[in-house]
Length: 367
Image (tube, rainbow, N blue to C red; front, side, top):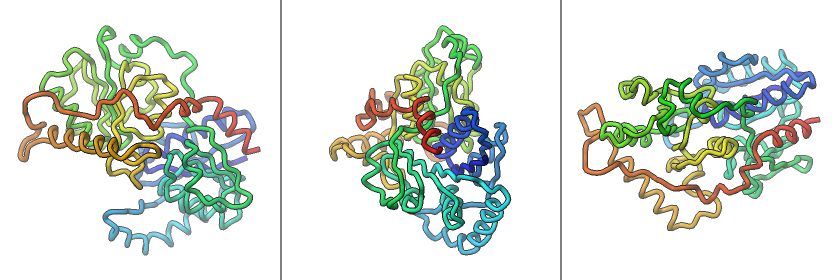
């Protein structure tokens, strides 16, 4: 039985698809996963490293701020519609699963028009456009957070599950932290900070880390730094053998999590799920420009706290931003500020539901 999983553009939508593909394959029920992504997404780099069959389509995102760029869809839409239709006819999937993002939309929509059963996976507390538009025609909708249910209009026969976000299973043999540090070329005796801004990187985080390294504020720690592929070339000069490892993206990310004593990262839904699964202490930095203000305005956060988090984040970006005409961060007194919170109040113990129990429940619900 073939199951097509469509999702990508960013790691937040690609990683759930990979996790589900592994779970469906390992369930031993004769499932053949097929992953579908975009030619311009991170999946173009990551999927060839994995054993799953995959197909990349010429799909573009929908731009919210630079809306005039969406005019390209006038010429792109007929080609995407044709290629998705050809893919569905050639593969004849028994089920199409969409894990969100601009890749999932056209594929799930065309599958629904072809009367192929569809399942949607929504990772965020505020559902994305794909889930909101297509939930009515889906057979099942799987939510990472229960708050998303109130923002969806589903069909009369649509089943809604809240099972947490699917993360890739932890390695059977976790090994010890010093061995993981040695495997990454770091000193096992030093504490290690893992900093990353998601698959695309985070400019504010990158500036803050670069400033801290230049001001020698992290001399007592080792740093694993995921800069994002677009920033890796410019920031590679900060790498120090045995102390600072600079990569665009850690895939697989398991070794980095295993080696880390502390994680500093964007507060994406999938990152939070992974941190819960690994049990890592973390500092989470919300993205002020996230779609629909997902990180800036999550359910339950009070307005003063939202404003304080936003102001602190922008101060961090301003203080760590390189001065005009210079290559590195602008020097100045004191350490660069960052949003340093022991936890994010909105993500409580409910996210611990992620993990193998969710895999079993998800797979069982499909049969």
